[in-house]
Amino acid sequence: MLHSSTQDTLVGLFVAAGIAGLFFLALQVCNLNYFTEQKGYTVTARFENSGGLKVKSPVSAAGVKIGQISDISFDPKTFESVVKMRIYSQYNSIPDDATASVFTAGLLGEQYVSLEPGGSSDYLKEGSNIEITQSAIILEKAIGQFLFKSAEEKK
Amino acid sequence: MLELIQTLGKSTRAGFTKLGRGTYFLLQTLTGILEIVPRPRLLLNQMYSVGVLSCLIISISGLFVGMVLGLQGFYILSDFGAEETLGVMVAASLVRELGPVVSALLFAGRAGSALTAEIGLMKATEQLSGMEMMAVDPIKRIISPRFLAGVISMPLLAALFSAIGILGGQIVGCGLLGVDDGSYWSQMQSKIDFFDDIINGVIKSFVFGFVTTWIALFEGYDTIPTSEGVSRATTRTVVNSAFSILGLDFILTALMFGDD
Image (cartoon, rainbow over all chains, first blue to last red; front, side, top):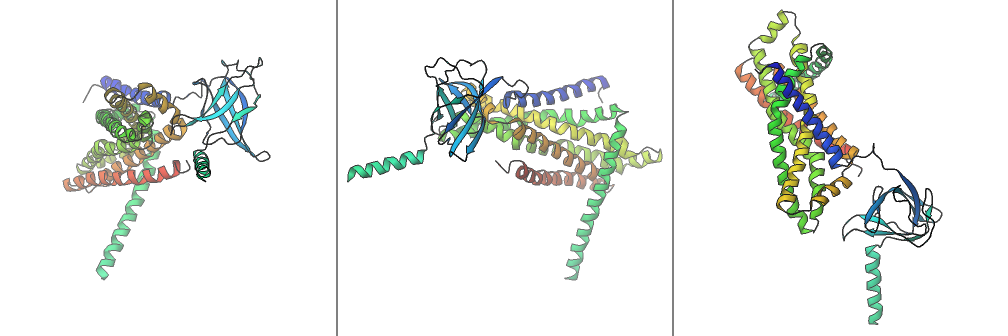
C-alpha cells in the first residue's frame, strides 16, 4: 500500500486530469462562449427562400465571419423567411444598403449569409433591416430550369 | 413438460428476488453515503484504486480509439472530398458514444471485476460478518465509499477518454494524413454543441458509472462464499455490466438525440 500522502497526490492528479478533460471538451471542442458572449447588434433580413440556413450559421463579409444567425422564422403574411442575425459590435460600420445573400460553402458545405457592403454613408445598427436580399439557390430548381431550357432550344 | 415450466418459474422467481435484493442493497448503499462525510479518507482510498489505477488503460485506449477513428474517418470522408469534417466526425462519435460506452466497458473490466472479487473474498473469508460482530455496518464502511468513488470516477474517466481520443485523431489526421489543423478544430467547434453533445455524454457516463458500480458491488456482496462462487460473481459482473451499458446506451441515445 502506498503512503497516504502519495495516494492523496495521485487522487488529486486524477481528479484534476478528469476536470481538465471536461474543460478541454467544453472550451476547445465546442468553443463554449456563453460566458464570453461577444457583444453585438441584431439586424433583420427577409429572404424569399432561406434554404438550409440554420440558427448559429455564420454571417460573413468578404469571407470573414462577422456574426451569426440568431433566429429564423416564417412570416405568414408575406410568405417570406425572416432571418435575424447578430453582428459583432466591432463591425459597426457596415453601410445600411448592404446586400445579404445566402451562399453555400463548397458543394456540400453548410449555408451562410454573406453581406456585401453598398455605398451608403449610414451604417447598420440595432434593429435595422437589410432591404436587398438574394435567396438561396435551390439546386433542384436550377437543374429543372436548365433541363426545361435545353428542351425548348431543341424544338 | 411440467418440469420445464417449473424450471422457468423457478428462474423467473429467482431473477425477481435478486432484483429486489439488489434494489434494497442500492437503497442501503445510498443512505450510507452520508456516513462518508465525516470520513473522507475512506472515499479517497477508493478513488485511488477505482479511478487512478484505471487512468492508464483509459488513456491508452482513448488514444488508440481516436487514432483509428482518424484513419477510418479520413479514408471514408476523402471519398466525398470532405476530409475537413474529420474533426467533427471524430469529436461527435467520441463525445456522444464511444467515450462514455468504451470507457464504461473498460471500467467494468478493470475496476468492476476487482470490486466484485474484493468484496466476494471479504464475504468468503467472513470479514463482513466480523465487522457486523463489532457493530460496524459493512455497507456503510465498505460498500458506500466504493460506490461513490465509482460514480465520481466514471464521468472523469470518460472525459479523459474523449479528450485524449480527439487529440489522437488530430495526431493521425493532421500529422500523418495532412488534414488542415485549423479546419479540424474550427469545424469541430462550430458543429459540436455544449449541451446537446458534451453534457449529454457526461450524463451518459454518469448513468453507466452508477449502474456498473452497483452491479459490481451487489454481485460481490451477494456472492456464494466459496472460491467458485467468487469466480462466477466476477464473470457475472463483467457480462451483466456490458449488457446493461449497451442496452442503456441505446435507450439514452434514443431519448437524447432523437429529435435532431
